[in-house]
Length: 142
Image (cartoon, rainbow, N blue to C red; front, side):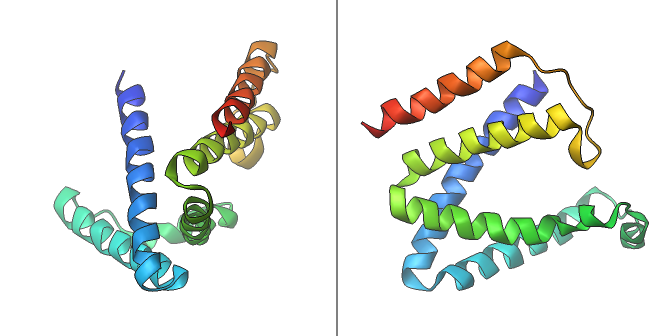
């Protein structure tokens, strides 16, 4: 149950953040907005680190494979693409496309066991669910 609730909260926060970031972009620029997002996220992480305990920052050097350290770069790219998508399509359409793309890529990652994830067997009902989600995009566009 916790996983469901926290995932729903994550989705809600992503939608709200996208709208906020798009508003900041309208007054500044996309890179100023993206930079602000990353800077304030860093500050929030530092505060959380102090509040929740201080595990070694040096442990980051033990992360393998090294490509796992690219999350921040992905974060900047995500911020940029969400801002651009919401600006072009509006929040609802952009989020719908984002979520379906996330679902499709996540399923491919699981199917092929990419990036150290557990490999799962192909299941037709999951492909049908993804097809229904794509149909939902088409219906929503009307």
